[in-house]
Length: 258
Image 1 (cartoon, helix red, strand yellow):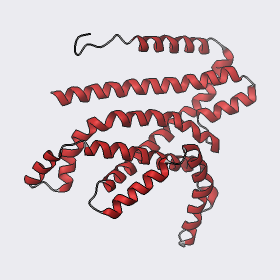
Image 2 (cartoon, one colour):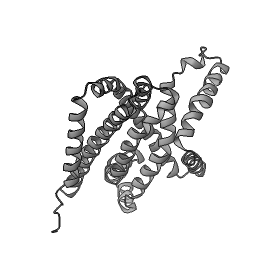
Image 3 (tube, one colour):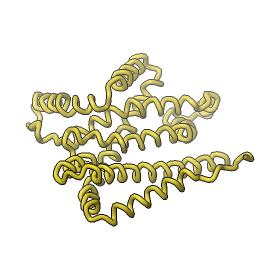
Image 4 (tube, rainbow, N blue to C red):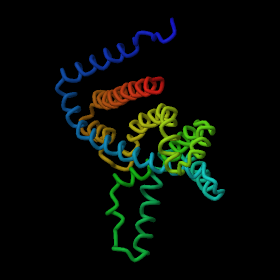
């Protein structure tokens, strides 16, 4: 294979044939069509949980990465403490802890401060689940940002200092644009992983795809058909997202070479 030449994406063709055949089978059967119609309501919850959680986790993760690279020993140690603790707890355990321990404690602390009273049940399980995913993924994303920021050559940063650029402008115009090309692939992988891990919110009763699938199967006893449709929806979402991220990476790669 010559340089720059790529294999024909037979894997993509195979996945396309698989998904097409699966959707034809689903739409040609009345029972699976009803299951799909029911589960479709959970897609928006899954998308909401994923997008909001990932966006917030990126903000927190970037802050942690900057803390870990700061000149302050205290900030570096605090960031490292947070990352190591959170990465050492399984996401499912963290989700249950935040939903049933941390969130009620947060509400109690809020009321203790004398602020307008809030009841624990006012803190919905949906937002407790989002908070748990933000906490969990921010620790992993912090390491992605830290590695990306450290990949920028120190010579360029020193040159920017010599030109009199302030720290914010050095970060905005020199460091971040170059770090993005390093950060994007692992960050995209984390986004795809969060789409799948968002199914964990079903354990606290959030009506996402997985939870609706469980309730549907318990009601119609069609476990085979229901969980086939659940798997099909998740596979479709992750494949399309992965393809979009690959395209974005290639575009950034071409931009970087031009």
